[in-house]
Length: 472
Image 1: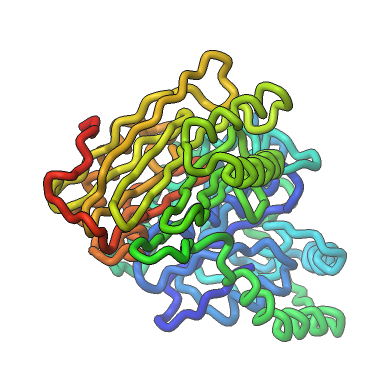
Image 2: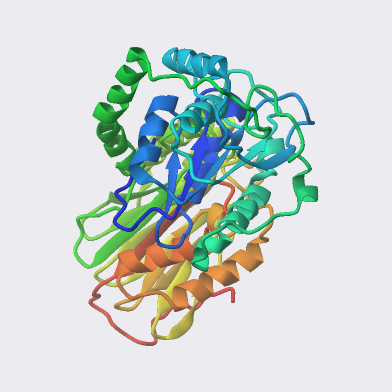
């Protein structure tokens, strides 16, 4: 459960529930991780609530949000897989036995939306405006990564979350009405939840000593848990140690419960005055893809030791390795060498996206021409080297396809969006990369890797020596 400091009153809390290692049942955590990278109005908190109900109860009492929106996958066996259900939570007290059962199962470590709602309702931690958006899972066995059926629901869920939060964006005090026909579940009895139908209850369950212990546990440990989740997930930048060039980068894994994804960049010092740069990604997602990425990254570094100054030969080593052992097969990779003192840039491509060049001579930027579109290990791959000269102040943006392409965004549309975002971005390299990432990743459904490379000074600063091989 994350818990960033909230300086303004919490106007809305978006909380995701997931069960790590349980395939589709972990989908709620992935949704929240996605939502955390989007922009929200002030006072909107987006958190992973995949923890025991007492901890969530403590967090709700701490934030006191005006609106609560829970998202996740819940197996109710009432609808086909990938069916979306949206309902407003009835705040009437539950039967005592339901509250007791929720407490007992929470003590045993079960993370469950229904148990959390039961306890939060009983102790009055939920606002009147509390809504649940849940999806029926397709696969609930042990494993990492959610199914394609749920992946296809992502955009719809994000749209519904935005719709629920529209009133927050406009400063209203109540959630917008939604059509029952959209989900047709307001009159459905959801088994085990007690979230929809009102029940008249005379008996009130008094807090037990065991529950008080749990609440104290949540209070004592919440801060430590929040600090852990605030830590950066992956690389925030790279430095080559070579004068005249700086780097800023982001890697954003997506889709499974792993700290690393399938995309990476690397910066490797070569002979004096030269640096090798690589950006790549392996197919797939999850632990398997992350492991394959790590192996390929090591293989690239090993090849750099042998032929790091020759991009074509380096890709040739990787092709033979993939054909012989299968390591890195079908990976997309771009390898470049840069000599900052002269601005000389050489590169070879194995199916990667073309870098975007920004400098004074090309106000809107242009994409460098690439050849050799076959991925690593392709039997008929013909690698060719390209060379351009960069001028002082030139900036290259290297990126994986996750930044510009998704199920709903074709690559050409995404690349045009990238170029427009980069042309209007702040000058500072870190700020430029932040702006591009925020502008281009709103609909991402895969890992993203972005690396900015800026030439600070060159011995030859000739305006005629500009990149001449631009696609458009």
